[in-house]
Image (tube, rainbow, N blue to C red; front, top):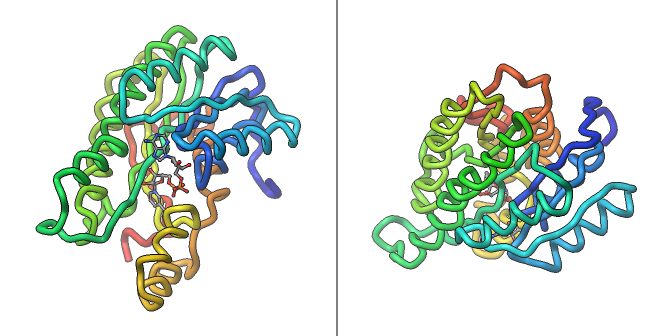
Length: 258
Ligand SMILES: NC(=O)c1ccc[n+]([C@@H]2O[C@H](COP(=O)([O-])OP(=O)(O)OC[C@H]3O[C@@H](n4cnc5c(N)ncnc54)[C@H](O)[C@@H]3O)[C@@H](O)[C@H]2O)c1
């Protein structure tokens, strides 16, 4: 990436969930560009394979794994696969997540609540549970979870999403405090509107006015690029971010204080 900070992850291993598309794909590519071997995990196997192909074409090292991060067995297998394939685990971007609807609380179905909480929150608990022991074996590591700008001000629509992302912030704080002395840092990023699959799908159910708002509401006046998020993720994993732990980092060009 032009103008990117030089980070050397040679000999390191990174795991990215939801690495088949959007900001997960961007961070997988950036981890590989920095020299890490990367496991690209996704529920969409063909998209994960595409990311791996892009990494290999650029001269990097990567493998894909098919997983639904909402279930323990899959997450344990994903982490075991990473260690068996590349010899350990140093960095994790626990990124997979879904936005399904703009329904308000009374219209929100119990099934959807269960699915969104499982995919966005239980998944992060499971990733932490199975990733941290592997990082302890390496003497440390760094984890970046994905919250959302909606954790600053709430969000009238999609309460399951908002609740799940608030939960991610709490999990991040607890895990970060618990393992600080073991050289493992756990942080969360809180992105604004990023130009990914979530926004592409939202274009199908939002009005043109709502779309325009979504595109321009941030102080910078445009959508954030997935590559900009990827840069933040790898930097948070690097030693340059040694003092950042158990933190929520706004990645929204200042929208949360606007
Ligand atoms: N795009 C935004 O504006 C925005 C803003 C704030 C937070 N986020 C969060 O960023 C993260 C990444 O989203 P994105 O915007 O890149 O979306 P995206 O839809 O482009 O990518 C998400 C990826 O996760 C995968 N995935 C979905 N469910 C999964 C599961 N159960 N198991 C494994 N993989 C699964 C999808 O197949 C996809 O490849 C999500 O947690 C999302 O909530 C996005």
